[in-house]
Image (cartoon, rainbow, N blue to C red):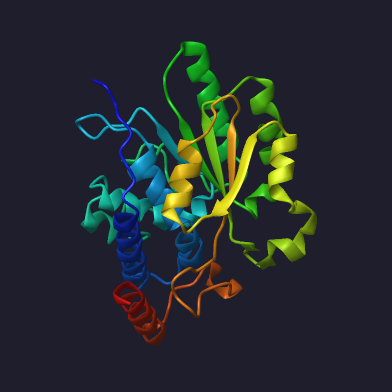
Length: 276
C-alpha cells in the first residue's frame, strides 16, 4: 500500500505540544524525578517529524523510522506516541513505576520504539547502519535521528558523521537539539569549540542547516526541502525547559520533578500561554 507524507498543520502542532507539556508535567507528579526540561526542548522537533514528515499508509503504519538518540528526553517521544494512539494513557501513567513498560530511556521492541537509546553517542551510528542496509537492500525508508548537543561531545557521533557520506548514505535526517545545556552546565562554556556547528557538519559532508527548533514550520520546511544527495544534519536552536519560566535554561531541571507549588505554577503558565 502506498505511503504518503502528511501535510503540516502548524497550529495543530503547537496545540499538541502545549497539551504534551501539560501531560509530561502531570506524569512528573507520579515519580521522584524525570528529564522534563530535556523533553520540553525537543517536543516540536519530535512532533513535527512524527506528524508531518514520516509517511503513513491508510492503516497509519510508516515505512520510515524514528530514533531518539538523546534517550533521556524519552518523555517527548512517549507523549507523541500517546497522541498517536501507540501508547495508551494508562501505560504512560505507569512511567518508571512498578508494572510499567516505559522507563527513563526508550527500550527497543516496546510499541513505537525502534532502538534502545540513552547510552549517549549511539543513536546516529544505529541510524546510519539502518540507512546503509536499506541502500544495499534497495528499501525505500528515511531514518530520522534526534540528538542532543551535549551528546555530541561523544567521539562516536563524529565518527558516524564522517562515515555516512563516505558510504554514500543519503536517506538519513539527523536533528541536533541545540539547547546549549547538558547535565552540569552550558555546552557553549564547557566545549566552546563545538561551535560553529553547521560549518562542521558541512565539512564532514552533510547537507546542514540551522533553524528555530520550536518552530514547527521551520522544522518541516527545512527537512521537506532536503536535496537528497547527502545525509542531512539540522542544528535546531531550542530552549531547555521551554514553556515553563523557572525551568528554562536552569541546569537543575535536567533531572527533577516539580514540587506541588512548582507544578501548579507550571500548569498556570502553560494554560496562560495557550490562551494568550
